[in-house]
Length: 133
Image (cartoon, rainbow, N blue to C red; front, top):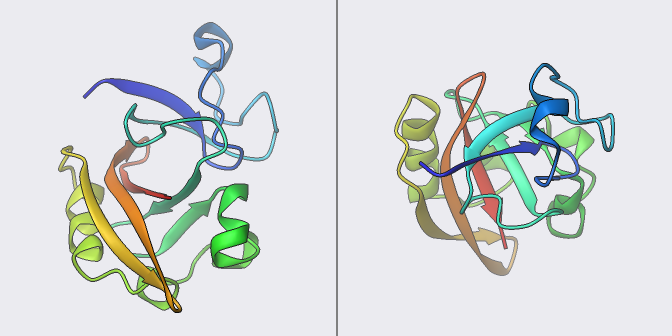
């Protein structure tokens, strides 16, 4: 996996590696946690991201999910299926949260809209990362 360190809230990924090495909180927004994930999942700063736990709950949501899913704060702790009609993506998210590393692409429904989504692993702690777009 070609990895990148990113922020769960602002999705910043061009952070100074030395500055972030010993940090858990993003030095840019000071709101999100720093995780590692596949570069292809966090394609650019500001991506719409969901961190999903192995029990398919949302552990974190980036600010960029707001136009798609609403305010990111109340999403934390909710079941993925209550927010997205995820289908196969939910199964894959559980696998990634348990250690599978291959990134896969899916289509998901949000209300009447259909979106593309990528899912892969992130850590620490081990979780799945869903990028909506």
